[in-house]
Amino acid sequence: MSTENEIRVFVAILLLSAYIPLPRKKMFWEDSTETRNECVANTMRRNHFNDILQYLHLADNMNLSYSKLDKVLPYLARLNENFLAFFPNQQELSVDESMIPYFGRLAN
Image (cartoon, rainbow, N blue to C red; front, side, top):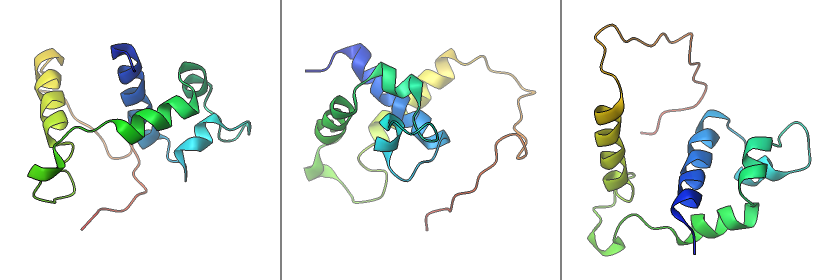
């Protein structure tokens, strides 16, 4: 059974994996210096991460409309509520495309 802190670490690894794209998530734990991420490898064991990934469900599969985000929409809604509640709202906030390069593809 996972603790609350382990779930937080799990989510942090998922968020980090979105910013550091590797072909496979297991590469974060490999011995290769090119792919190993010490922060990830020292925080959670690969097998434990895979167990949580396999058994963690955020939605009831019987009540889905089968869009790509159906399973995580309740979680994303909660994250957005927390971001709005705890992020200092500033009118002068902007993000420049050169600051955050994006090399992926958009889903259709």
